[in-house]
Image 1 (tube, rainbow over the protein chains, first blue to last red):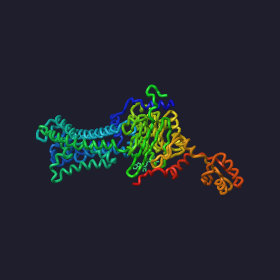
Image 2: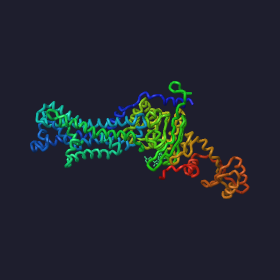
Image 3: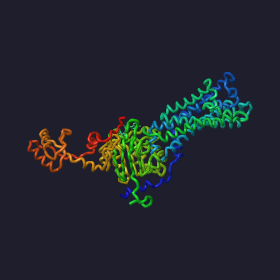
Image 4: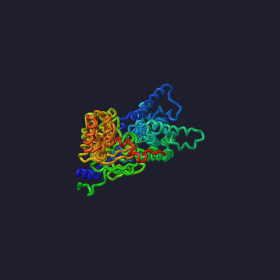
Length: 291
Length: 324
Ligand SMILES: Nc1ncnc2c1ncn2[C@@H]1O[C@H](COP(=O)(O)OP(=O)(O)OP(=O)(O)O)[C@@H](O)[C@H]1O
Ligand SMILES: [Mg+2]
């Protein structure tokens, strides 16, 4: 009987230390280190600028520069243009794909492994698990973008030199100022990427299937692109997610044009917050019947 | 009686209190109105055939799925409200799962940091207890089913639980593993842990549990102490003679002898001691010489089948599967 009394007494003892979102976040990042897709995404983020620079290297030697896109003529003048050109072209599918690779998987993989029941029967509330996972997915996207940008800067400068760059308004800024603009552009680029993360999380919680969530996120991203080029839908263009991927170009005007950036913030919030909120509610209320 | 340091004077709410629990999946009713109370110190067997709703019931107790109707209270707290209800509670449903790309120890470290407190300090002890210490550095993806089952127990022990909820804990274990599992549960129970385990291994439940609930298609068809259950079933005898046909006739004619039938080639009947003595006399007189006459202990198995397959008891209950 004394054992019984002791046992009920012990249960009422408040826990000395309760785990929190930080524990989930830390372990999510740790788990990412053990997953192939992490390296697939980060690897792509790092390799693409290198391939790109190698390509300009040979093209430059063949037809001495020039080209058919906005920054082409500048590419060979300063390596700092390289990360910006990659941002321009990566927007369509590369960065959404890299982002979705983890965001789309982070909940679905728990369903796949049947591990939700394992983590949900410890001492963490569902919202804490959700927050930790969402933060980890976002962190991964940030890391991927900055790895990409940094590799592009380094590879670009090796090829074309750390030189001053011409802004979209035609003025020339010094190389250090140009570098600052590159990183600011990456930061602004994170705004639509955050929305992609939210969409990935939503599809991950709703479909409970990693492949479906990754492909779905990419499809949504491409769909926006498609709407933008459909005839008669021109008026919607400023409010499409795809357009927000170009908001960083405002930084390259002189003076800086903040209007596309401000618009990106609220347009992305308009898409991202409902997606994230829905994912949150679905995760909080769902039955964990599998696994 | 209670520990004055941290407990009020009352013995506190029961470890498990389930009232009117129902879970429907569309047309299918997996759990059809279960009432269940597990008192502190009980080793409670939740027994039923495949698809009876054992796992579904345990999932609701652990807050993994929402009941369609009814309530669950663990030490008086609702697992749907907060995970705090699981303080002092551990267990698993179906086969325990882990991250296959992490090794056993890492998995436990992850879970321990999700437990908080000093769970981390219990990892080594838990691994020793389930005899996985030497495989702790291998990826769980390469573990056998039985090893995962053991790791599941280790993961539960990290929480230093007062209440263990186990869903078929011995499934997939080899005979030695099953024995170890039983010994472990026995030991934990002796230390004061309350255990609720689901099973269809009757021997396991019979050996371990002091109380059982027998479920069939989502409904409890029997609930009570095992000893009680057996007593209510009456004494059965097995008989084998030189002339079984004549012996059958004698048995049927003998007052006080009931339920005469052939089971596994032997005559089976119920009777009390005095009647048996008279019966043996009658058999010899009739020329059916006794080769064997033995009292049959009623196993839980017999009761289980009569309750889960027979029509008597269960027929009166409402059909568990909705037919709308
Ligand atoms: N997620 C689900 N969706 C639909 N039906 C379900 C679901 N989970 C369980 N069921 C149904 O509920 C019933 C009870 O299932 P449950 O897994 O609880 O049985 P069980 O008693 O644990 O069986 P077993 O001994 O085979 O483990 C079954 O008919 C099953 O098909
Ligand atoms: Mg089951």
